[in-house]
Length: 245
Image 1 (cartoon, rainbow, N blue to C red):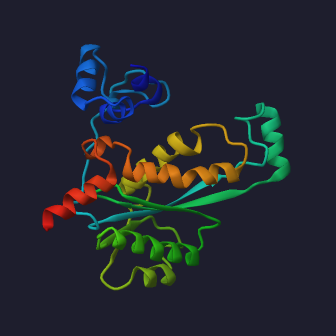
Image 2 (cartoon, rainbow, N blue to C red):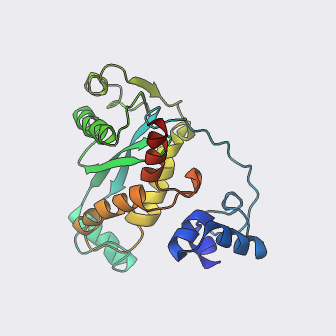
């Protein structure tokens, strides 16, 4: 019960964490009349009434890839307020002025397979070079990218980024002021914040940076995702591609 309230985990994630079957976890949740995640307040874990969201999904890997940048404040050497007191942490940040890291993401809509890098800016050249590496990553997993969706940021409207997309990849833009249009990558950002960026106190940005590759590997290869029936992204890629052979 504590995993549902304290961490707001679904039955797939709880079953994976406790090494139990999903049906066993769901039976326990039902027995104690636990509300669905959509009915819990994210901040408090208390039940609230919310309309059930409409979920869309493209049928094959590569049909649509969500691309975005997440701006994240760097941790000053010695740590911020999570390691020190709030006053000392704020003082340390002001003194060191660590600035920001820019997390560039590419998330496959169907499988949730994620390619992500921590980079120094969000300029058009950086975004274009990131996409070339992301496309190579998806190609290496047997995925042919047909469409990419981004927000209307200047780096994505640049000639450099569109040249990097190449022939045959259609570029779509999100509707202004409608972040849910790019919902898969927005959900990835929330997961990233809860399970990596703020999951534990870090004493420096280098320490948090060093933990990112392992977290991303777990996300892609081991973590159970409620939105894809408890599979990991790599399992869903293989399940689909094997069915074509």
